[in-house]
Image (cartoon, rainbow, N blue to C red; front, top):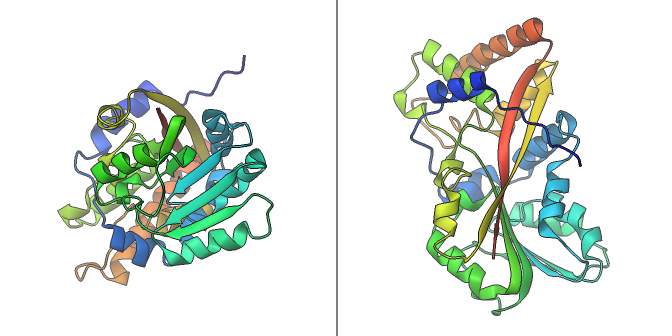
Length: 304
């Protein structure tokens, strides 16, 4: 039986207690639509880096496919489908099924449409928020996904209530998110840089996924679903060149959310200095250890 890698160490657990703030960023759906996903760059960078620099031989897509338990005939709804990267990989497992992709951002929704254009699996594309599913009939889907997007949804109560309404008996709601200390090493160099710059205190916040994370998700989802199973998955990205990491940090994660929204207190000179501080630390780690590691603590809630 294959054993999944475990990257947790006492040292990383202790570091997380020192580094990860209790408060997390909160961003509106409008910000997500108009800034993060007004094009596909953020998603493209994350997807490329996660694939090229991972060390877990089981990819996140493989993890999802195993959890979804597809037979090939399911009707699947993807909430926040983004650019269709995940759906492209799932589609061969739904050869006799259907795909419905929903996203609030027209740019990435169009990218998904183009990505799956011409496939034999029927695809429907809907521009809407994940808490507005009134256009969908009840008992319509065997599988519903929400991957790394639930923290943007304005009304979680309405979202989960609607998911239950449109999900068929025996179906699975597949929600993927992170632990609050996922990618700890990236946040460590980021906060170290901010401290060296005496940066504004409001920047010292954790990922917005803290709204519903692997740490608190069981209790939240248990209010809506009879059975909630948590399946964890770990990976570690390893970089021997600082530049791919810097793209991941600046474009993929908006300087750990510091540049996610316009702020008159933070100009380009501020971010140039921040990048210099971060790059210096990453280069030092590569010279000392041979690579800079970013450990991912992530996983999926399977709700029935």
